[in-house]
Image (tube, rainbow, N blue to C red):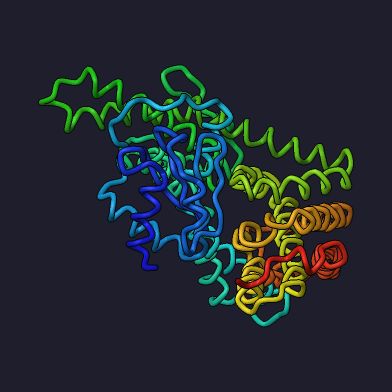
Length: 451
């Protein structure tokens, strides 16, 4: 089935073109905001060739397509002809938690390729330096580090552009707000530490380094979306072209620097402090909680909610202990999937399962979860227990990384150093536990055979 034919069937199955408010994608899923979720024919979606599964949660409908989701999304938006919200009867009002998760996944989804690509380069570069293949003082390392670090340093710009689409406001004004956060005068003052605040019309402007931060810019673009609408509402039409953006920036950037930016930085620090407190209270408990939640979070599409905490850890501490646990989850999923491969009988079934297991090793887990593990409860439970075991081991050993990297076996080189032996043991533990529990509890007769 071609992409064009597939998307036509998807549109029909989700209630038709008029039922679609908005559609976007992350690395493997199409994500829909719909007017009427009762209009979805989930059975029909699951029967479509090339669809691995679906999930309806938090007022968002997700269709798991796989790694070619971008091409399917392009075909879908071409078929719809627009990404704009369609006029229709208002749908069910979202709860706060559901709306928050929609925002996080919606903002991070489109920029995941840039983060994943830069993270992979960062991981490989760290490994090559640790192996002394490259001299960390060399020009080559300077250039490669620039390639790897630019996305994270200028992360507020990426988040601003993405958040503008979510909040339905002007993307270029959003980038201008990010520019206010990232202006050298502010960043240099924060790095020097000689000035704690500036003053604007008698109000304090805290001096904060906003590079690589997440929550401040998202909060600020949310505020800007209301400011722009309010200004535009009262601005005479003849003056709107010039004075709406002028007043929007004049109000938003100072407000962001005085209020939403510091508030966002404080909330981010609180989240990071909570995770640090959990580790301090009991590393084993931290590993069990994070490792146990992660597979379920991926299934329900909530895993992006953990990314801001990891990024905040990098910004505050220079390292993070959450992402190594995410790595353990992926290895646990791969281990359980490999075990199902050995239990499967049909050639087609085995081929699909093997491909999903390899994808999990490389950091893409949805094919394994939706295509294999959620079909077999014992296998999913095994991967969850293995994720908990690997994550608890990492937490006890204090395994950490010093930059965002993709949770992939290829990124193992980033762990070269004092934590490398523990990384190897953790991988073997997560893979082994996931494989062993699945292999010894799942019977061959329980695994679907090729039709």
